Image (cartoon, rainbow, N blue to C red):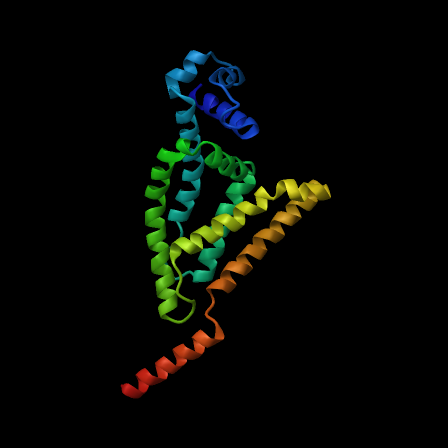
Length: 216
C-alpha cells in the first residue's frame, strides 16, 4: 500500500500540480483511507520529497556507475546524455512540473536541494577529473564540470518542456519519437563540439609543447 500511495501521489501531482492535490484525493486514487497516507508519509511535502528522491536516485545511480576506465571521454559524455534523456522519456511531465513548483512553492524544495547536493558532489568531482585529464592532454578545452552537467540537464529537459510548442504541429506518435531522437543526437553534437579546443587553442598548445621540447 505504501508504494501504491506513492504512485498515486506522483500521478496526481504531475497531472494537477502540488497545490491542487489533497491527501484525500491521493488516498481515493490509491484505494485506501486518508489515515494510511498520513501514517506512511505524514504530509504532502514528504510525499513529494520521497517521489523526487526516488526518481532522481535512479539517474544518479547510472551516472555513478559510469566507467572509470579507458573508455573514450566522448563516449562517456554521450552515455550521460543517453541516461538522462531516457529518464525524461519515461517521465516526460517531470521537467515542466519541477520548474513550475520551484517557482510557485520554492519552500518545498529545501530538503530536496540538500539531497541533490549530496548526490551530485561525488559525480561532479569524478567528472572534473575526467575533464582535467582530457584538457591536460589537449583533447578537450578546460571546462567546469558543473557547467557541463548543467548543459546536459537543461538541453535535455527543454526537449520535453517544449511540448506545448511542438504540439502546434500535431505530431503523430512516430513523429514525436523521431523528433526526440533527433534532439538527443543534436544535443550530443552541440556538447561534444563545445568541448573541443578551438584552432587557436590547439595552435597555442603546440607552441607551448615546442618551447618545452626546446628547453629540454
